[in-house]
Image 1 (cartoon, helix red, strand yellow):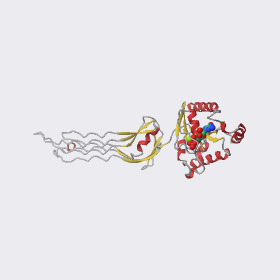
Image 2 (cartoon, rainbow, N blue to C red):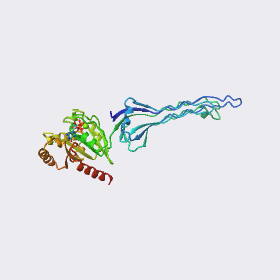
Image 3 (cartoon, rainbow, N blue to C red):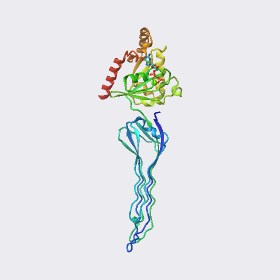
Length: 322
Ligand SMILES: Nc1nc2c(ncn2[C@@H]2O[C@H](COP(=O)(O)OP(=O)(O)OP(=O)(O)O)[C@@H](O)[C@H]2O)c(=O)[nH]1
Ligand SMILES: [Mg+2]
């Protein structure tokens, strides 16, 4: 299961308490209580692994390590180690307390979530000419805390959308290294999966149905994975009695999620053309062409249309690198 939206609590380590101690050596009875160690800070670190948020499925609280208590004989307590939790690049970090958002965009990037509390002074640091035997000390400071929502927005170049069972996953598998599950029933794909075609990342989005925006089927929450996708491949099955209606259903759901999705470059794929006569394919193509978008008739079984599709994918790669 792809974990892509989690809430977590973060608390950095507490600073260690300062010590109160005195030199036992005769003739030098001064204070020797050391400082407490600093609490460890908590960071996030960007990685390529899309599944990295899975670690937060059960682990909802990230606690930094506390600093150790100051020692005797001027020995400071050890600092708590910093912790860095790995999250996939494309994760948006929403700070639920301040309302601020931050995006993890690069592999290796580090984001400080909560700074560890400073260690408290030991009695050695309180000595003065008027107080040569201080018994004062400080408790360490609390580590910073925050509450976060981590939301993964895949950075795909092309989003594959359409009703269930129209061949989106089959298409992804036939052109890329993906191994998306394919089966002859609706909602085979339960979570987005990715395939890579040279430099292009394609995201296979679970099938949408009419009313998905009101929670029918699998809902439309997955559409956030294509919010930042420039190009959409819209799949319509050649077996459908009403391709234009299918088209409108999906467009309405896109609109309900975010009207901006309607302005993305969209290519239409009339899929599974091996299952109907050429005459029917031509008829349906003619209808879809009235939408004034490029329409590709394809079949992953007899491979028709795949050469043209690859040409399109190469064009998209070129546009991406310009
Ligand atoms: N004959 C034929 N069958 C196809 C073609 N493409 C896909 N199929 C079949 O159609 C069924 C559905 O294919 P999927 O790729 O799982 O469809 P999907 O759009 O990903 O479906 P969901 O994940 O449920 O949204 C499977 O049985 C595929 O084998 C095609 O070009 N020709
Ligand atoms: Mg699928």
